[in-house]
Length: 511
Image (cartoon, rainbow, N blue to C red; front, side, top):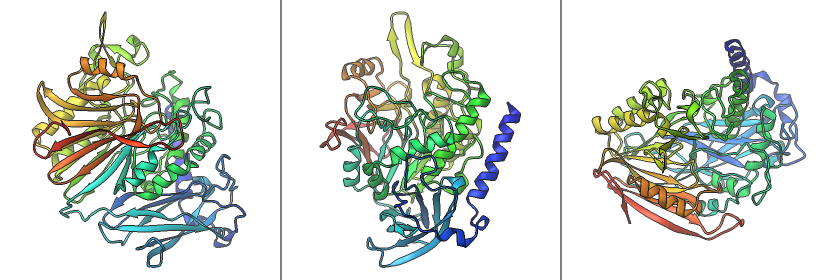
């Protein structure tokens, strides 16, 4: 296994380097004209900093082919950034080669811009121009920011529903969008749902590229990417359902699974607006990181899949459900892995931000499900690694971290709750923002769950949608936005619930 892993790492490093070095190709090869529009997957931006951001596109005139219809030749892609939507006042421009080894994806790291303002951008390649995208830089590091609006979502299963939620997310005009995992779903097509995955379940790079090609061809998703910069993290379905570390739910041979994980991570990087130093090396990819928004907020983004040990009490489990067991509360077992957990504690202890927003995949609070033979827990999230959660809550408390708030996804339901070490003494509030399209649970089931877990203050499982967060120095307002139906392409939206968190006073209030 170790030999296979080293071999994967070595080969991936060579490919990653070659794919991002323009000097590897001659300019003559880069000037070929393309018969078809190569910008079928749209444009995106992400990773905003006070002086720049990442601009992304991928050339794919035929997005449902593994190579996007591009073949092996590199293509020069020109880009420009302007201060106006018509791109008359261009302030930065350049060129980059899109090469086959990186799926003809482009990750432009723009620098030299002004902090805290909007910009517009466009790509050109092979005689074609991309759509125009809007982005923005983060405020200056020590800026006293008065407001920030962000939207967050997760779980957009292509087959389960349409993505009408994005129409309303764009209309909400967020400064920033957070996507908290399950950008694609890997399963093969089923008889249920409103549309079908057009390909078999991906297990290699070609398969994952086709799956992303299907998802990113959706015009509503493209419009959401073009409206604001995104910060992205993954969950399990970007690789395979319920995986963790080097193990999937089927207990596939680890060496074989790591080859699949390497392919999935490479495809993820090729399709996300990530900085080039985030590119994977074989089955390893560094995704946890922070984003500062002036003095107003620091976001800590977690990776809860790649670094965890094998599932808690797996031999005793019935699917994801486990009884209580010593492994569940073993402090040596971390959902984040040792290095990431130490990193997070250090970031929390040193943060000077007014608000500290933990962006991750799940409901963090302890969830117990009663049954006749005792209470059960999930071994797939924080409840399977209870001491990891406790360490974070203790850090918030002991380091007097300013105004911690948690955002999550994964469970396809809207949930608001409080996090505490002692009953009745909340340390932080958390908000799970539903799902863009993946099916949830009945409200009857959600009410039973809420009754068994007093830390939950609001639950709703029958609607799809997203969360909207408005931050000011004095408060955090979270609105759950739900479409009437995700079974039709376009649907009205309504505010399902609204919550207030007052700065300096832990706990949420239903507005």
